[in-house]
Length: 442
Image (cartoon, rainbow, N blue to C red):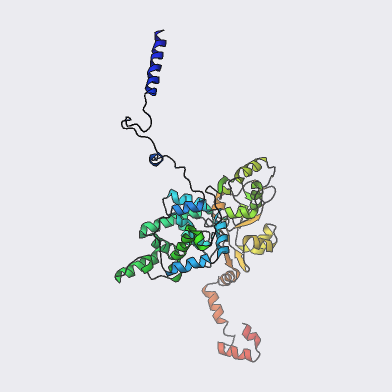
């Protein structure tokens, strides 16, 4: 009974306290004050005022200093006068921009750097320059290797959407730390840090400024930042240039899905229920008709198709999902002999492995060949990660074979300049002109 009375008394106290609270706005609240929209912000709490689309999000993250000169005006007008080109580029970018912006924001880097692939490749991850730069971010082979972008006979990570973006932002971060200026970092990305460093040193020796606009550089690099500034201007205010950018939702376009086993590209696209071209656009590093699980353990699929792929894979009764596999050449051999060994037509063998005419296949080369029905195992990680195709011209091989005699072979060749009567080269030539073909042949 005492317990019930105590609970009842406590309830009365609480109710009385609530009834005696002053109305909001009363000056008797002590140190408390009403929470308003303006002061509701708190560190660590996610803000809900998200941008409506990705373009707005990019605009909000602009950090780089503006560049204003005649080259910027020229490039802005050039892009502004090509609405069809802008439309194609921006539509192509819609698959990749969200991922790039996410990565930039995670590193606290300027979001206008997400526009750099417009300048580099028009957002084409399959782009290859005349100088052999490849992918959306246009990595040269050596630079790609220095940033751990695998390049082998089965895949080229310079084209990989996630790997190349990671490498490009790593490189840009390093260049910014090196030069302390985003414009100089971009110049170095295009021209090389060594060249930019030398240009800065020359200006310092001459007592000249060392900003991007003051350095002596090739025209391509001179135009590089103005092009990016032009795209930044257009994205910043499309109506000013009579342009309408396609809306890009502010959410992921793709997600990464495990690749459980070796699989033909056509099979993977079918399981995901998407066109092969759409699959290749998200997985451009897989430039062969087969995906090797040991080398590419994950694939990218449109967000809604990832679950479709998993469901179809689990329900599939396809016994052999890869019709291609890797074969290692045991010795140096002719293309025709290699094709015969793997039961392929020579022309088909050359085409699938991109082998030009008059070439020999060196021992240890990894080649793509049909996978037999009895072959159950997938390609090993060693081959999938390091497979390479080494070729040598047939003519070089013939010359090496004919020169195996060393000094004696060389002496024999010189001796052939004379016949058994000790004729000189000139005498041989004279006799050849008179019809003595037999001596000339020696």
